[in-house]
Amino acid sequence: MHVLVPTLGMEREEWLMARRKGIGGSDAAAIAGLNRWRSPIAVWLEKTDQIVPEEPGEAAYWGTMLEDLVAQEFTKRTGKKVRRRNAILQHPEYPFMLANVDRLVVGEQAGLECKTCSEYRKGEWGEDGETLPPEYLIQVQHYMAVTGYDSWYMAVLIGGNKFIHFRVDRDQELIDYLIKIESDFWKLVEDGTPPPMDGSDASRELLNRLYPKSNNEAIELPKSALELIEEREHWAAQEKLMAEKRQEAENKLKQLLGDNEVGWIGEWKVTWKTVTTNRLDSKKLQKEHPDIYEAYCKPSSYRRFSIKGGDLVDKASG
Image (cartoon, rainbow, N blue to C red):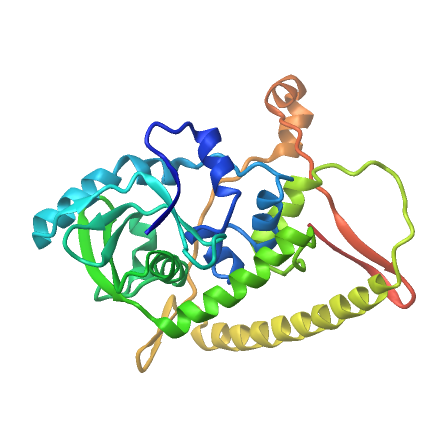
């Protein structure tokens, strides 16, 4: 098992610098388009040292804090001993493939990945608790590619009160695919060529982070922009049509319900329920109590995207 660098006692900045030397398990899921929080272009910008990875959020913080507890519970329930491997591991043939694993299982060619999950997201693990979310499947198969191991165990604490564990076997076909896409991606890193922007929420959030404010300047766009405008308008029209069809079906169901709150057809439950909410009348507050309004008014800004020209009306989005 090849080691890129030991991590015992390593500061976070040193660890981030080491991770820039290759592709880790969570990076692999992003490159495959299966990470909800990061896009391929975000990974590329991090590896080319153009952006700094965001600080871990509250969920990631508690996941790290509870990792040891989850590992101990895995040992308690299975009898399998695990140990830390305080190092960033490296694929012997593809040195850009890296792994920072949670634990290795003693006496087996296997590792352990420890996870925590909120009650809200428990459905991602299936009713039987043995359904692996796609991004984690990619992560552990990447680890097996780097280590050469045959299996990886998952141990998950769900909602703070449910513990599940199961084994994931090596999938060589999937590993071959990962090696291919990661090789292609790393060539882009080495060549300084960014991957194409995609339509994910992660990419949208990245653009908002990179370009938070406009500079009031105007530029001439390249000819390729016209094709993008036409593509956007095509899909916008399809989206509008689908939204109208969806609303039409919904309206007909509401007509069938009438004053009733719930309707049943077979196993389907249709609900049209009265919901009462309290909302602040900001216009009235500003008019009658301008001093209070000003004291608690917090300005916010965002960039409004729109297209005008030709036969197009102003079509805007956030």
